[in-house]
Length: 229
Image (tube, rainbow, N blue to C red; front, side, top):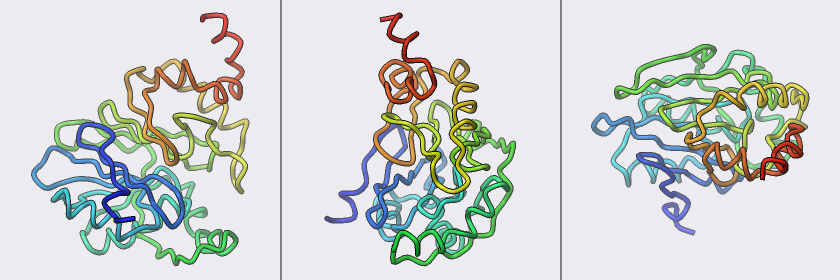
């Protein structure tokens, strides 16, 4: 498979990179400024992301990580060093980040994670190309998991999937906390928001609220959802 075959446009100015070494989604998001973009969750396939950047004529100005697992921060140090882009991660996930190489050894993944220099993401809000980008704290998958909201785009890492339930059974995960987190966002996120998860396909939040039956069951909302149909 050619590197460009792993890249697809999923929204206005947003491209998904399907990492091949360990399946996860990374995202290239144009900022609206000439030649500028940011990366979300740069995973283990440096080459594919680089090919995407070159093909699109973009250079990353920032790197945003929804959480500290290796498949979401694996190439952050590379892009930080090459482009001088600051890398943002919630401080509660620094331990998770530092344990990345151990976890990859456990999964027998032939990849070595270099540690990027981290900027604190808790409560982060900044203007990028005339639009607000915000980190929304969303613990459960990991203690420092976050959602990254940029206009109508919502990068959700492993907290919220388009189809299925966010992960909470790995070390540091807590299903009860994940459930509380998701219920806390359930009535406040806009239905038209495009959910861009760390694994699997994208979906609008309204579609997830209506059609993601495993998630509705996990949250205890399936019966009420069925009554409304």
